[in-house]
Amino acid sequence: MPQLNHTALFSIFALLLTTSLLYASLGQANPMSAWKWMDIVGEGGTAAMAALWALLIVSSRPGGRVTMLLAGGLVTIMLGAWADCLDEFFAIPSTQYWDNWLEALMPVGMLIVTVGLYYWRQEQAVLNEHMQKRERLFRDHRSFDRITQLADASYLYRQIRMQQENHLGDEGMLVLLDLDNFHQVNREYGQREGDRLLQAVSHLLLLNLRPQDLVCRYAGDRFAILLPDMEEIQARWAAAHLQQAIATLAHHTRDGKHRINLSARTACARADEDPEQLLAKMNARLEAPSQAAMHASPAVS
Image 1 (tube, rainbow, N blue to C red):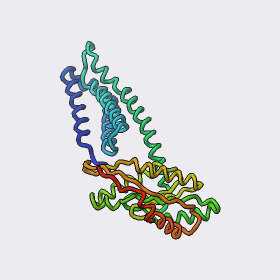
Image 2: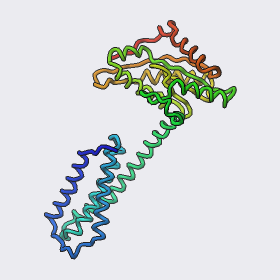
Image 3: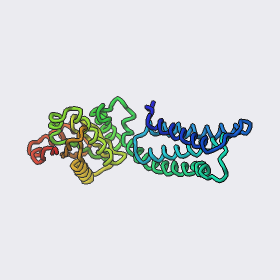
Image 4: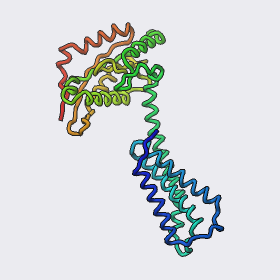
């Protein structure tokens, strides 16, 4: 259940109270016999529901343009509906027009919500693509890595074997990616900061791969990427692209005082043999001293 946003609740209450006091001080109270109960229930109910929806949005969504537009539009609808409701209780002199402007806020609020829904649709399209890349994982939630929420090594082995069985002769490619000198991050900033960095890298990998690709946390600071229907030259290009993306990632520590710049090295191979033997060979290539010496330690500023 989302946690109630007390600031938003206070703001909505203040707007409703201010509008009520405005009508009470500048208008003349209508006799109860002139009240139209159906209008009061309909317009007051609309105001109450719009306020509730706005509270739910700001309490359950992260801040940003979409949240601001949706919540702001609903609050605008709330004010317009509340002004309509107060018209049943107070008569405003015909020489004044401010109440008409308040009542006209409802269509304005609907327009703002519509714009918010448009941007929400764009946001959701990106999230759907991101979730599609994790789709295979939902079939076996026990294979999730606790820190990165990616698949683990055992799940990777099963997927490689499945790929081999279903696509004989076109098994695709496998990329093994290792973060350079990651142990220094854990030693200097602690394991919690190292876990945050692994999470950032996992999101970065997902955003830079196709929906059908599978990203796994193989072990420690190593990630394995299964690339179905891909030739070797394309896989090497994809691996180089991932290395470049990681090199451009500027990870800030939680306290904001330091920035960690990363580098990574990769190994590529066709996924056409026993997964455990294949990964053992690729691990050996990554751990070769001559290759590791070509890469610098992560820079910290």
